[in-house]
Image (cartoon, rainbow, N blue to C red):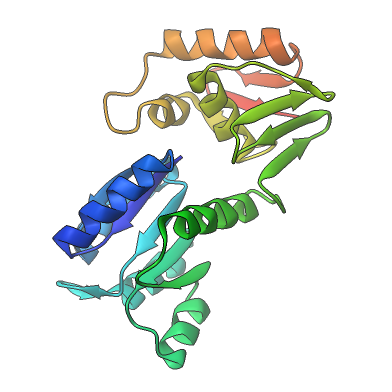
Length: 221
């Protein structure tokens, strides 16, 4: 899962990135409003599963940035991560469109759990185990069950399936999937992506992952 971190403090930002990496997340870190807006412009926002947003930024206020995102109809889940703990500030953040509000300092395990919570709610799931008919995807344990049988998947195959399942029934473009598999480097070659899709179909059933020719793939129940 790939995240956007908006945090101006160098030491804290580095600590958060390390904690995210240890929890299995990848992330891109920016330190202000302007680069955050640039990173989420147009289709670029689609590569992020969630944003962690500080409120005290050097070139503007994080709350105003959050309002700009929501006014632009950006549905990216946002967790406000700030030292501001006043009740009125917490209420303002949630009312402005934050999916969660976390006061620093926070334990790495709790932050990871909150990220999983807001991203699964964004996909319409109630728990860390995502159910699609007979298919169950345990996003915490990174395990997949099909009709109560454990299906062994490679790490890349799991990432492809999770990215598709995050938007059940929605066609996910090839370029977005390729970028999700390699978020911090050059996107994965489409040939390699198609190979992972073929492996998933072989393990889960040919009809479970559909192809929209010239666009991408979708997962169905």
